[in-house]
Length: 255
Image (cartoon, rainbow, N blue to C red; front, top):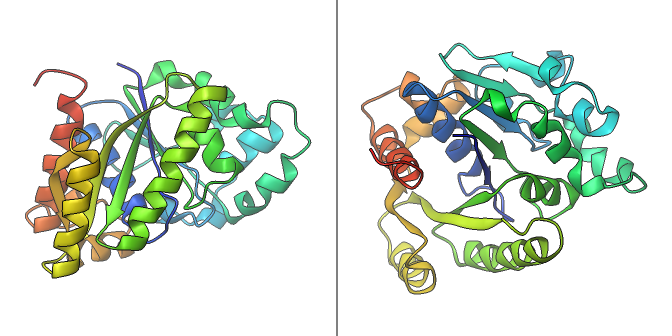
């Protein structure tokens, strides 16, 4: 199947990494060979699988800076059919290091092309910015999923990200498209209802039906180094991410 999906947001704290981790975990639980690439210098996706970033020898940083073999960076997770390429805080300096590098926007794409035939799904957890790292991720994928929290600042971030996607589509990746917009961290309030109404008005065809609730179990799962399905499979957060995962899967195949 070979689908490359970037989970991207210009703003932090919108459930981006939680979405990347749990989408990857859900797809792999159905038997799809899945790899998560942690492309965020904060390394939260790496930690969410119980790994300590500083203890990992070969990370995504080595792939884009030193052009190392990506197969050396692939790490088995405790879960069947799910692997990860870890991040490190070194990645924070990569944008400066790549300034003079030829075809610097395609470093991640080059690495992915060397492993993509091994996987059904490749999920990229982007950094919460619109810098060169995010440009690398958007140049490497076809589909972008944008998580949006119930905040008007999040809506502003979506507008900026969509502008960046349009620019990249024109210059670096003509196949790039917004796969969908996911409403996250929802709690009943007038503000949340207003933001959701705006999302429906602006992204009706792209807005996922699933709404991810604000759920303490999701935070607990991350702190325990587990996807939500392996921490509390019956909680509201797990049920919501299952529904979201099914929506994503249905957009690629008939199930």
